[in-house]
Length: 436
Image 1 (cartoon, rainbow, N blue to C red):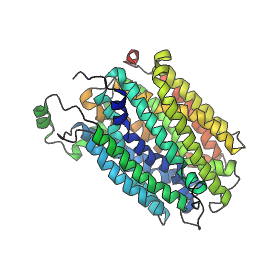
Image 2 (image 1 turned 45 degrees about the vertical axis):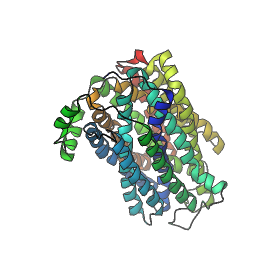
Image 3 (image 1 turned 90 degrees about the vertical axis):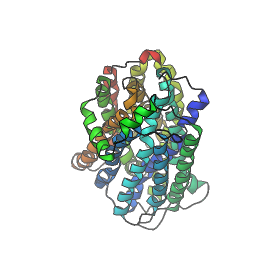
Image 4 (image 1 turned 120 degrees about the vertical axis):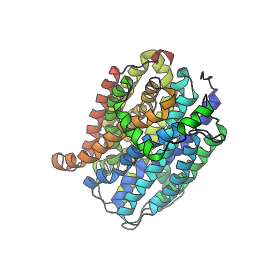
């Protein structure tokens, strides 16, 4: 089917749900380590506790991608039923997460929350390939990145805003999550559901070209077949996808190191404390939220310039430039003594984040068959998830045995990994780069 070019506002509406999805992810990324430490977790336990996030992505995204490829409803379409189901479940999980009374409860809730977010998020990647011609795909993924940035700016800064603007307490008794964090999660739940409903209502999907043949072909598709097909797909990847898998591995290893250890690194390296009940620790943890808001805000702005820069220096050159900025940002945190200077470090991280969320998907979508877009986008998630599992398995060991549990060294390791990813992007065969 020849796809028509969509208007700016049509691309806006189809991407708006990512605003809500990122509320969920940003609250998770900026606050889960804080919740775990408040409930008694040690630094070297954090990666294992975080393992829930990548493992649920590994299990959920390929299957949801496969099932959404084989779904069609005359009113709700192909991808939108999954957007809505995930949003409802994730919003419920966001309400319960900050009310965890014990560490095991918080770890379990992370599994549920991350699985639900993934149910909504995975079909959004395929949605761009479904709805947009090749010439608009970089714009489509850049628009998603814009909303990811805006949503994360607001969500990451919510605990600081509740504490400093609305005088909601940012400290609590030992083992209790502060009210500023709780109210941030409640507001995030509302935003998640509302934004996804907007996209579901405002966007219509293309039907299968031969609807009757589609129905016959998919009449017997079930969950087990979805699992089987999804996990054998890793052996059937197109060449471009194989090349991008290495880029993704090192990019997401770096990101996971940052998400796990920034709170510990900032509170110990800059604020000089690891006491989760202290005022200094909670001020530092709140400031990490502002830093994460900063890099996401930069990502929202940088995303608008990525299509232009890709036209000038190719998508591969753009990705190398962006990831080099991210590596520099992570390295610079080691030398920071003034918390305000962390915002400068986050500029580089934000540029990298914008590119990671858009350029690899734009390159990949041109190499995939249209009838398996969701399936391969789900399989592609393996190379987001596997590095996170590796990071969860080795970072705690490395820090404990080689760096005296100094969390700042995890960010240095992340910077090296991000630089490697940028260099590997030059080896990718980008089939429709000339169309951007």
